Structures are given as C-alpha cells and as structure tokens.
Length: 228
Image 1 (cartoon, rainbow, N blue to C red):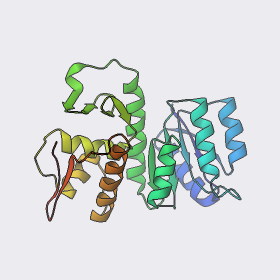
Image 2 (image 1 turned 180 degrees about the vertical axis):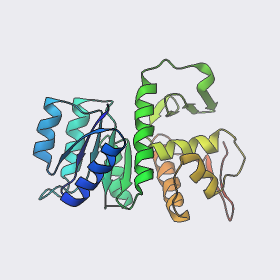
Image 3 (image 1 turned 60 degrees about the vertical axis):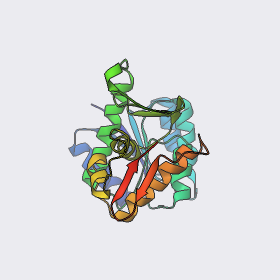
Image 4 (image 1 turned 90 degrees about the vertical axis):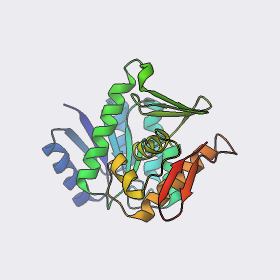
C-alpha cells in the first residue's frame, strides 16, 4: 500500500483529502504544520507528499518543506496543492523541486489522476530506457517511458501536465493541436486560458535552456503546433 503524506493547515480540507485518498486504497498521514511534517519525513519517508504553501504562521512554509524533502530524496514525488495560483508561485514551487503544482479548485478525480501518473512515472524511472520509447526532434529528446524531456541533452523540469502537452505537440511536428486536443492528451479538464498559461510556462522553461527557443508556435484561432 502506497503511503501518502498531506501537509495542510486547514483541518476540514486536510481531513477531506485524507478520507478520499484512503478510499482509493492509500495509506495516508496528515500534518498541519511544517516542523511536525519535516520531523516525520526525517524519520520515515512517504511514497508521495502533497504540500500546501502557506502553513499556519509560515507564509512560505511549504516551499521550505519541499526543499528539505527534496534534499532527503531526489526522487520522491511532490505535489503542491494550494490556493495560490500565480505564475510566480508556480515557477517557485517547481524550482524548489516539486513534480506538480495544482490549485485547490482542482477536482478530486483530477488530483487522483495526477497522483497515479506520478506513481507510474516513479516506477518507470527505475526501468531501463528502450530506444523505441524515445522521440528526437532536433535538440529535443522525449523519453516517453520515463516521462522526461531533454533540450540539448539537459533535462527540462516539467510537470506531468506540461510533459504530455509537449509530447502531444512534438510527436507530430507541423500538425496543429487545438486546446481541446491538448486537454485530452494531458488528461485535464480546464478552460482555454489555463491551457494558454500552461503553454506560456512551458515556453519559459525551454527559454531557460535556450534563449532562441521558438518551437511552440501559436496558430491563432486554432491552437498550437511544434515547428523547428
């Protein structure tokens, strides 16, 4: 049974998530503050952690907790689940080492899908890479098996949602993918503006590795396409 720890300082929200996760067969432990959660992590690591950013009197306590947990384990899946939805907080969370960043208006089925995807990715990371699972498009390499993307052989840190969006675009260069197509590939149900925000964040991440990156093209009124 997979062990999940959820760190959330609002009792009702925390207990609701714990109840749902237990019904899906997970062993779940909850904490309402950073020090207790950090002590627990140092004693025994969970298989996955779900962390809020603001924890009691610590505005950014979740960020600190994420850094500490990532120092203890480079591979444990970490999800931020928070009410803070700014691009700044999202980028900060991912740079701290989180694997995914979700807001609290995320539906429970969506949350469960992200958890399952991260567990699947964790399992796949332990398996050897098979050549047929690789997609290469110039400087881009996609390892579908391990759900990893490289640009000029450098690993690009993407969330699970962002990975599937890039995969959807790059597997058929030149073909336009509508926002609905990208939602289907990423297995999310969001509005068009959220897809637009995801694409902006993906571009920013690639630009960190290549100032001249321009492979994701907007086709106005239709969607996006990958073009090198």
